[in-house]
Length: 358
Ligand SMILES: [Zn+2]
Image (cartoon, rainbow, N blue to C red; front, side, top):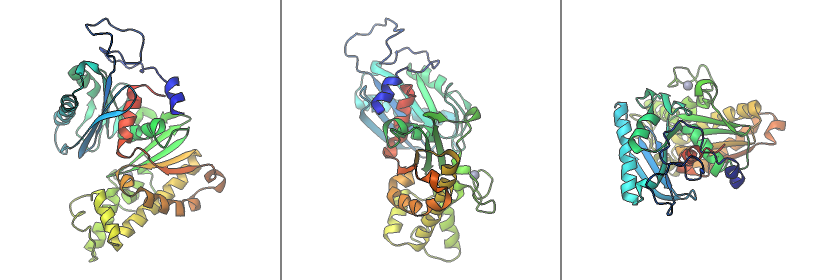
């Protein structure tokens, strides 16, 4: 399946890059540069830049990861230039540490959270990083001398799963990515659906209870406010403030917990943590039911850090409830799964973007 897709989608996308190095598979328009014709193995560098961490991978021509890097970043409150620097540093470090010949670098791609003009490589807006109308592709292309691609993090996560992971073989996918926030991604009729101005598929802001807890977006009762780390952390904080005890009290004191903490709380039978998870899964099931009714997808996919850490538990709880919230005739043709690529979903989405996979 993936093979068929790859074969059908070889075009390295009509992106306006100053393609100094032609994409490896592209036969046309090769500039006769001073480069040896043999030893033609080229590499792509793919990044997953989040609010708190940067993941990087170097892919060879067989789409195999030959080198990885993981770093904490502290972009909060800093300037775009700092984030830019993180990307540049990480790419340079990866080239140096992996020992690849930088002349063999074909392209670099990264995600960013927020609203991204993927065709032009512009970060229009991001809630958690300080980028506004930022021509990251232009800046990075100049810096690295190869094409640079950028897309929304969750869209790329779903796109990566579609081409390389749990989404292979499906044409209509609704993806929920459960992390600090709650991302959503849609593949409809085999295309990534992003709506007008790349602003769509904000499944985390489906309002489930207008009188519910306050969401980052200013509304109340969004899926994100119940089922993301922020939502679960807020619930735990509230319960602790009411005098209950939880092993996670400290972890949520000033923000969101780390997923590993939640796993440990579960192992310790922490009642409050369990309630937070039950509540998160309940509202995910409700939202999932509505998405099943709305799109009649072939696949509902859950990914992101929380799912990576506790996926089977979340999936089990959601499956116990979801049938109540959708029409049986539609539900009967939907598969519901967790992401296969784990932390790598976005990196593979980057790769699909570089390769112009459709
Ligand atoms: Zn919201």
